[in-house]
Length: 113
Length: 407
Image 1: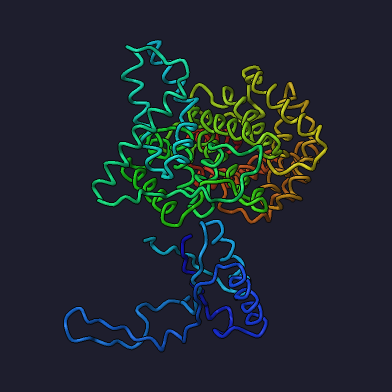
Image 2: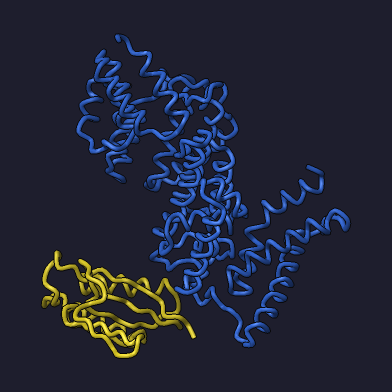
């Protein structure tokens, strides 16, 4: 079994950042299935990128910078961590997840131990 | 080439994919599988001339490759001082699908996985399944050898890190995944048939031959798949015309002007047999089968005048229902010109959103020429020449343009 990060990408051009009731209900159904099938590890939604702080302590005293490390039209709004035997299984989950939350998903494997 | 050299070359063609595929399953690592297969063939080149060719060359190669792989893994394990061996390809993949459970098929599906970029799929398929060397693939696609090497390494790293399974796809995914494999094979074929690079010779037989060989292999592995048969038939019927496709001066010769006596009759017979086989099933054909049928009609006609154009238009109608793209409508219009005349065809062509596609302008140029509208025809040829990349095609277009009356 391997773990994958499913990053949910949002583009403001496609509507408000918060999931609407239809999307929220579909996400609940999707989460339930991940749990039932034993694929669930963790998931969460994130506050807007504007609330981020970049911290750099490489030179000693930490330097705090207001805002995300990169400004982009499309940004991370949430994620799932799932467990899957291989990429084909993870791709199916990502496809179902994308459909449920009505957003694009970047699927990326964790480095295996 | 010496006699033994020819034997080794033949065994390489026939056994490479099987050795790599078997090794990939046994050692669970595509990189090790490839390297050990290459080492086994190198050993054969050293030994066979003196020792003679073993009675079962495939088994000898697999055994030799396995020994090389074990040696390699031992060395790596020692170096890393850990006993967990690299296990990159997962065989805990979806259930095998009965008759099509073959290591080579797993290899094909892995190399053509949709999570890989198209150019990576092409390179991996030519290397792992086709057995072409990295320099050969680099030459075929006119990229630097180091760049091609990096492309392959990147693809293998993704297979390993993302755990692309070494197996046949889920049953529900199978039709789409087969379509993906066929797209890779067709791309290899087309790059050989109509080279897109202006610095290259216009038609390259080694790539079309390789694509046909790989498609034959996939057909042997998936004999019941209609689209696999359709693509093989399409390739055979296209390849059959290759001898007539270039003039002595390296100019492309259009279907209308080709010397049909130079067509390869045995390839045509094989292609026609495949098309008939699919028709006999009575199942609705997919895109490649319809394209093959169109080519079967063309290759059945002794000359361009006796072509059954109404049959061709009917097939394009069928194709347009499967693939309603402007390119299909353009090709349909070319057949319409033969049936209903250039004015009707031009009305269909004008307005297609294909301004950046040189066959669109070349088609308009030919239709306008037939309508006697020389100036507009010349402008269309100019645009087609600007956009065309294939040297043989450019030469043909320039000659056609310069034949126009006036000026």
